[in-house]
Amino acid sequence: EHISGTQTGTAGNSETPSALLTGPDGFYERKFNGAYLYLLQNIFSADHQLLVKYDWYDPNSSVKGTAIGAPGSNFSAADIKYSTIGLGYIYYITPNVKWVLYYAMVKNEKTQLAGFTKDVKDNVFTARLQFRF
Image (cartoon, rainbow, N blue to C red; front, side, top):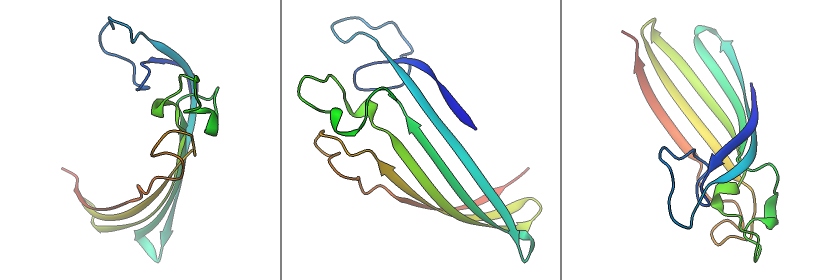
């Protein structure tokens, strides 16, 4: 699924503010795009599945990489593009209980902002036991 459009936010955040802003900060309007793709494959039986996921979110598709954080640019961490490759294994213990192991490899755009001049080490491993009732 692909998503794109225009979103309001603040200088430091791409989320739409829930209240009217006052003061010098004001609203920012950014063109964004993103997508997420999944592949689930049964292995051995319907009780075992492999999961591969790819997604990206670019909160400001009008600016790229090292332009973010450049002197006088007015771009911030709210403008950084992220992409993720995820690998997982799902085991259905019963029809109502499943065990999920998932590893997400998150990559951020390299910018001139302190802390984002290279990829931030923010990969995540998740283990879940999920119940349906």
